[in-house]
Structures are given as structure tokens and as C-alpha cells.
Image (cartoon, rainbow, N blue to C red; front, top):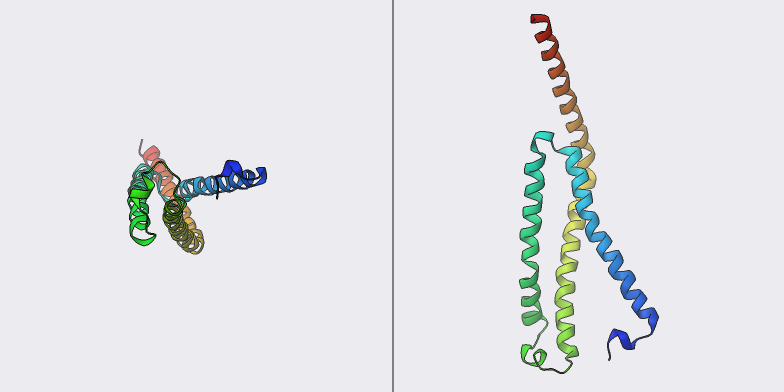
Amino acid sequence: HGNITDSPSHVMLVYCFTFFITGTLIASTMMNNNKMFSDVVPREKYTYVYALDRAIEGTFGAFGQPIVGWLADHIFHFDPSRANTLSCSPEDASSLAQGIYSVCASGCVICFLFYSLAHYTYPSDRKRTLRATAARSQASKSAESSDEQNL
């Protein structure tokens, strides 16, 4: 028992590396979403889709803390009376850590499932969007040329 500052220095490097990789992977989902939206969503609907994406992520993200608390209390047997004392409570720290891990792991699994699905649907969605954009562009050019002829 003891905290991370009592451990050898390589343990701190492992923690830092793990948190760096985790943060990078979490941030990459937003970049992936933005890239896929820009490729698939028609320009006139960008703002709506981006706003909807942020609203959905924010809504689900807001449920994270209460779910961690519920899991720690009811599933992993967190004891608030022990945790509120000024002494160290490794059992309660473990309960809280298991709750946090459970929520993070389930979120990662859900993201993995959605991105796996997107792996199969994205190419056809992108081709369909490109064809629709080309058709709109062609129709716009045709309308412009007919307007010029009428002048």
C-alpha cells in the first residue's frame, strides 16, 4: 500500500504514458467525427449535425458521474462513512476506481462498436454524398447557363 509518490520512478512513467495515450484516444474520436461529418453531411446541414453531435455527447457525458457514483455505491460497495474520515481508505479508493473503469470501459466499447459499423457504412455513404454533390453542382451549372442564354 502507499501512493504513487512512494513507488519507483518507472511506475510514474507508466501512469503518465497511460494517461497520455488515453487522452489522445479520447480526443481522436471528436476529430474522427468531424472528418466523417464533413465528408458525408451536406454543407447546408453542417451546423445542425455538429450541434446535434455535441448535444448527444454532452448529454451522455453528463450521465457519467452519477453512474460512477451508483456503481461505486451499489456494485463495488463504496462506504462513504469510511471515505469521509481523514485516514486512507484503500478499499473505497478501489471501489471508486472500479466504478470509473467500468464507465470508461463501457464507453470505449460503445465507441468501438459504432466505429466498427462506420468502417462498413462510411465508404458507401461518402460515395453517395459525392454523387449527390456532383449532381447538385451540375444542376447549378445548367441553371446558370440557361439563365445566361435567356439574358
